[in-house]
Image (cartoon, rainbow, N blue to C red; front, side, top):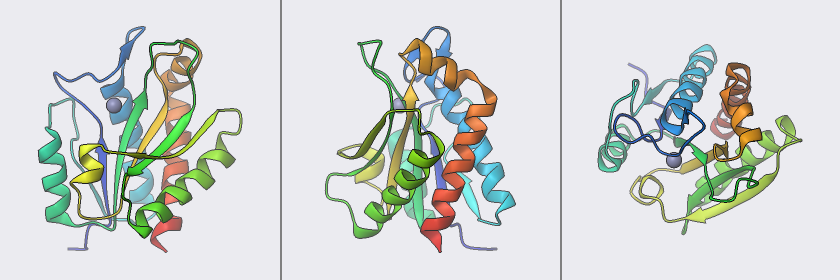
Length: 180
Ligand SMILES: [Zn+2]
């Protein structure tokens, strides 16, 4: 069996919907983008696993523990952003507060692809965050905030399957660039 290269982590799930606005739940959106990404990685011949494959609750500890058992080259957590101000929009990539050199290199690969593929979207940059899945995983890890689910305009963008597929293709290119 080939070594797992990537762990895809669709944020939230089950009883934890994540951000929920205008009948769009973050957990479903994250999972759909993750499905597309899994398909893309399969096509590219990159072995991967997902921390969840359906709408179920998986704790943060279960996610980081699974990743630490599999020890992939990269951990990619997929989320959507939300803010009480409806006008907030944009995409960002998060690394841990004290990131490894490779985590920063991975974040840079995502930044390059996202800014090229989604030039009309606000780019919020590479951010340092104390998120569990970034702190407790023992391999380079990034968390992507795909757009704001709280903004009606970007929520409409997130609802379209075609955009989720485009985002997954963009992530696949970022990952392939990072791995080589
Ligand atoms: Zn989230």
